[in-house]
Length: 326
Image (tube, rainbow, N blue to C red; front, side, top):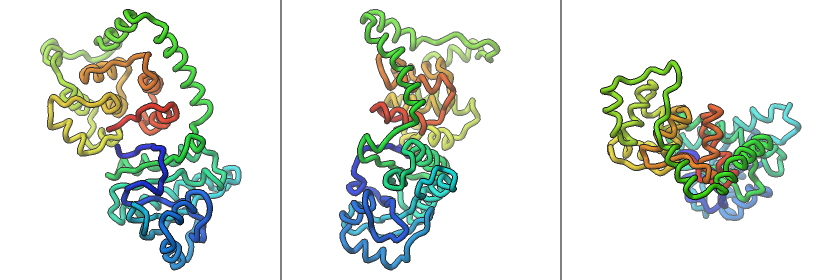
C-alpha cells in the first residue's frame, strides 16, 4: 500500500531511500541518527562532512553505503518548545522536503522514522499526526510507497481521547459479541450482509436497474460507485491507499476477490454510509462483525463520517490490527 505504518529497524529496510532524523551538523548523534551512521559505516560520515550541515526543515542526500537502501535523506526536525515557535510548520517542511528529494531522485520506496519525536521532545501523538497528514497529502498527488517505521510500541501513540473513545466503542460491542451464542452471532453476520432500506429522500434505481445489480461482482459495484460519485480511478485508489497496479487488476478482472482490508478501504475512499459499506463488502464475501476489532474500528470511523484513511490506519495500528489498503 502507498503508506504503511510498520514496526521495524529502519536500518534494515530494503527501500530506495531511508530518511535520517539528523541534527543540523549532519555529523551523527544518538537515536535513529546514530544507528544509521553505525549501520552505514564511516564513509557516510565522510560524505556528510562535505555537505556543510542542514537547516531545520530542510533535507540533504547522501549514498547509503553499507545500508540496504541506496540513499539516505538527512532531514532536521524542530526541537519542541511548547508548540508556539513554528514547530509544526518546520516538521511539515522536514517531511515535504524529504519527499521532494526522494521524488527528484526517482525513488519508488522511502522509509521515514517519526521525526522529532525522540530526543527533540515533539509530543508523539502530534508528531504522528503531522507525519501521516503530510505524507498522505503527498501521496494523493504522487505514486510512491512510503513506510513510517516505528521501532517499538513505546515510540508510537495516537491521541489519548481518540484512543479512549475507540477503546470504549470496542468494549461496548466486542464484549457483547463474544458473550452471544454461536447461533446469535451467525444471525448477526447474516443480517449485516443483507441490503438495508434506502434512506428517506434517496433516489432509487428503476426495477430493471435493481434487477441488473443483483448479480454485480465486487469489481462491477466498485466501478459503478466510482462513476456515481464523479471520481476518477486515480482519485479513488489513492484515497483508498491502494497501489495503482492492484487497482488495475481489480478493474480488469470482473471476478476479482479482494482482501477484507482492500474492500473496506474502497468503502472509506468512496465515503459510503455503513449500509452501503456493508453492501460493498458483501459483494466481496465479507460482513462487518462485532466479533472483530478490525471491523469495529472501521465501523467507528464510518459511523462518524471520518473518511481519512490514514487516520483510520493510525487507530488500527494502535490496536494491532491490519491496515486498510492493499
